[in-house]
Image 1 (cartoon, rainbow, N blue to C red):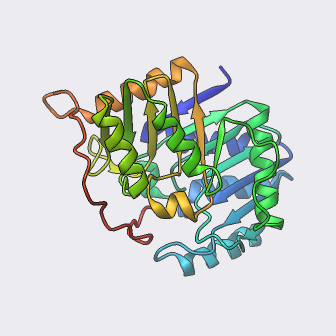
Image 2 (tube, one colour):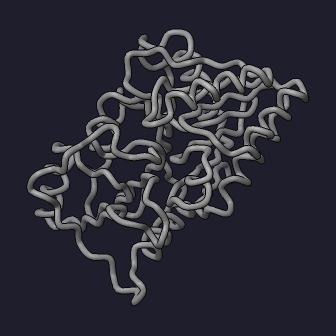
Length: 298
């Protein structure tokens, strides 16, 4: 299999460390928040074995501006190359890594103890050379020409926002013929809500999890599952800031075994203690206030 899903908290740090440790010559990564010392130690070890480590850091994150400055200095002190994102977008919120020419990792989580241990989050590790190449090109553009748009030739398996996020995700939902299942704690975009309301009124089942805890975990990761045949996982929330103004990345999952795994995850984690079926979502008439700075985990 060219791609592997990592869903459980106990497995996520191992997947990140394994990818860092697999790098022989080059490692790129996007960092929104990071306070896990094992991951930082693994990055330092990579530098010490002559791997070129390059990191792009967001310019701001709620209550993290000073820590982001310190993190950049710390990474530079260990010998990593640090790009401080300077584009016009409000945040560099994408979460991805590439070791050499692959494998690549696309996720929804930050490299923090909270996300590694206490949140509902998703990781896809891909050995598809096209995905690795696409992320490498995106990294280069965002470091050196951040307002020049997306690089040419991004594969369909990558959704990069804001340029592609709204169009690609809404097209996925609009194509639904049976069901739309979502894990997202911020389904607030008015256009998205209108589409979901229309699909629901036409008989399409719409289920949304994540507005509270998901199986005792803090809701943070984003999953869109359509007709139980195709999914998207990554950093893109169905909210205006995420769809309109942030650099985001999601992976499209079409492998039947992995789609089935995501469906089982949704059904198991969405059921209550009595394992009752997940209810249809009551779509609000008015969207909730969409505050770009609400989420501490974001």
